[in-house]
Image (cartoon, rainbow, N blue to C red; front, top):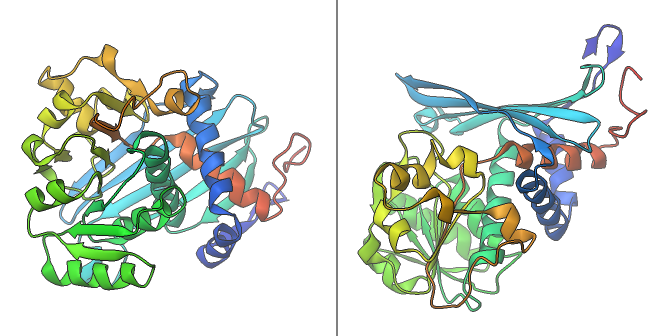
Length: 335
């Protein structure tokens, strides 16, 4: 692609997939952790999310964007979720990431990833939440949902946990069985939960990955010491957790306290006055140890991940760096 006589590289999903595969998981986890820390430390500019919602067919589009103060570039990410897409042979999520020179606005790179990087950075955030908030000895991982993100969440947990026992809860028995087979090939022993109560009794780390608009897990389903990462509720109306779970939790962590006021599980609990905003922690502060997070294996902890632009910024920079795109001052197009 050429803009004003300057050639801007466009990278396809296949190129981006190969690049991500070449980045060691601990390195990518650390890169995105640095983004969370910068965000919580006031060293990132992250404007409010722009979004559109559709009814027929059902779907939503989010635009997340911003930059770290130390960076010479800014990133705009467009990501969509259209939930009837599988009937058309398409993935639910689509999208792209755009990098620009911060001093000129000239495009630096187009990552035409079809939503792949959003899926990966979301799974990495789940691993980060578990790394810092899960009990010290996880016996069984519970996954709510059986789609692509449900698979990625379990795969990325490999990088931070030794547990290989898992259980899946899905509305579809066939999809649950397919999930179990696929994850068994990834060295997990996966059982199928008959209901949320069984998942809660057997699992001490639970990840919810659905676009549900009604609670799927109840407070009475959760045993002492459990950590829950809720990452499906990223709009005003989505909800996977009974708000009383957050009331019962000893620690509630947001990836972005600002976003949590209006979206995600925390927003529902705030509206019902079950929790106080002053008691919320932010993930970046837990990573930097400004806040301790979990204090004992008896505590219930919840991480509410609505998705923050720093994740997109960090993964986009990491991919471009491995692809040889100059991002340092003086290297970007137009300088």
